[in-house]
Image (cartoon, rainbow, N blue to C red; front, side, top):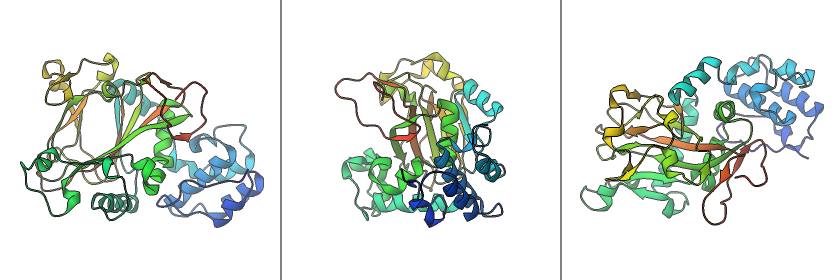
Length: 337
């Protein structure tokens, strides 16, 4: 079986010989020599990722696994420092609070590439299904004037990881998957993705809710959502706000009010935590974590790129035929999602 590198594009560069190599020692030798220990961080991350494919293991577990061949262990010992999995402290923080912010997950170049692609999609410069793009409701209804730049009216874009090659690559980013596999295990599928744009002065609020109250087809309700900031998310433009520990309460009753949401009387606003992020930072949160975002009151757009990951061993309990969910790590299981 030939090694096929599926995570191309903005992640990093790799040796072109890799695509025609068979799995095994020779492949690992070329990979190890292709990028030195003093190479830029992005290239080192890519090398570790390639080596992980050769050995069929998650990148950060290569060095710790005693069954990993010595030639891989020698060449990844230092490199693994760039994408180590979560520490015990981080795991404890996630399990206690239901969310975990992380700084500098994407490089400025990666952020710029994703941002430019998103603008091209929103402005209809590139082909993308129009049915997967939502305009801000108040703009669509005529209550607010339409901006001549179409992207400035966009509220939400979804199915990017299925319909666009760059976002397919992003959803398989080694740094992101290393965190997700630390939290959910080695076998991972994508449930859904949504990009929430919040245009300046127009972006509407999202009331308190739990994602799994919407996603009732997946059992157990324990997905992990990566919320990536493509520009600075602040309290003024609608950063994420979480209720720590709320994921331990199970699914809280939601009602159809101005939105499908949890009533204010059931929200512990006194202990709410806002999570401002710089561009390239992200937060990971449990699908039962109660959260909300405010309106964008600033003159700057706030873009949050979300991908919801689930264990490939989850069960589909919805009506009708099970959708085809994309596998991004590990393997599939019969009778599961």
